[in-house]
Length: 233
Ligand code: B1M
Image 1 (cartoon, protein in one colour):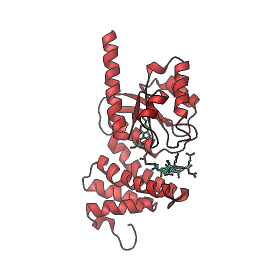
Image 2: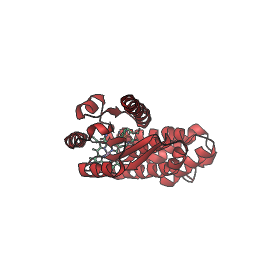
Image 3: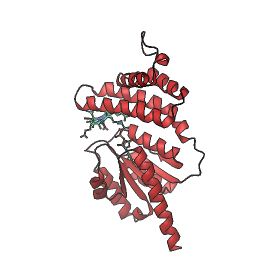
Image 4: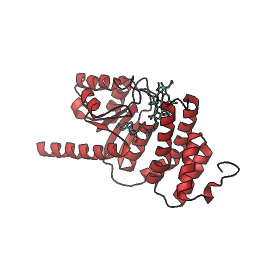
């Protein structure tokens, strides 16, 4: 229950989603989890629950963090509540049973501990039929290289949320070039401060604005890769 006065289950869908934004803002993990379960019980799709209740709620948190209304400890509570909601949705989004379309190694770059967006991308990619190896946060180039060596992915995905950490993506791509393995991989980058131009400047194959775009882009680039391999054989 959200508090003594509000019974989440008795709210209309619109009021419940609004209440979930407030609960996410207040870092109320149990209430966010309850809200997610209620929406799913009302036959909301996991995708709509994720985007309309959780991602939109986090967008509001982000604005107030930017404007100095919320501070790191409060945002951490919101992030934990968001993750608890995502934890329920993850297996549901992955439940496609589709044959694997390809493999992606994904991680947040060195110096950066933001992982909500990266986790979302991983979940949506899994849901679309990709195998995802998640390296977590704060990854130096050596970690990416070791994972590429071990898992032989089709795609390397990198996430950065800070203007101070996003240039590290170029360090990773340049190292792939030095090692002669850049062209074996599709490199996709994302994160709030990035844009298309930046993606090109660091030598990525694509910048992805959000998780849905990441899925579409991955599908398209894998299709092109298979076509060009087919044409060569
Ligand atoms: Co941070 N933080 N934070 N923070 N934080 C931002 C990024 C900031 C913009 C807030 C602000 O001032 N408005 C600001 C950066 C400013 C800048 O660089 N110019 C900032 C700052 C300054 C900081 C600290 C330095 C604060 C401090 O300590 N004084 C510190 C840095 C710590 C570090 O990393 N070394 C810090 C810490 C934190 C918390 C720990 C409190 C927490 C992170 C918790 C966690 O992730 N586990 C946090 C949070 C939550 C945020 C905001 C509020 C929200 C980020 C988020 O989760 N968004 C953020 C404000 C904002 O972005 N508006 C902010 C929701 C998520 C779904 O979106 O991550 O953009 P996003 O991901 C999207 C797309 O970008 C894309 O798809 C995702 C899903 O649609 N995408 C990819 C992302 N990665 C991709 C990878 C791909 C493809 C697409 O690869 C294929």
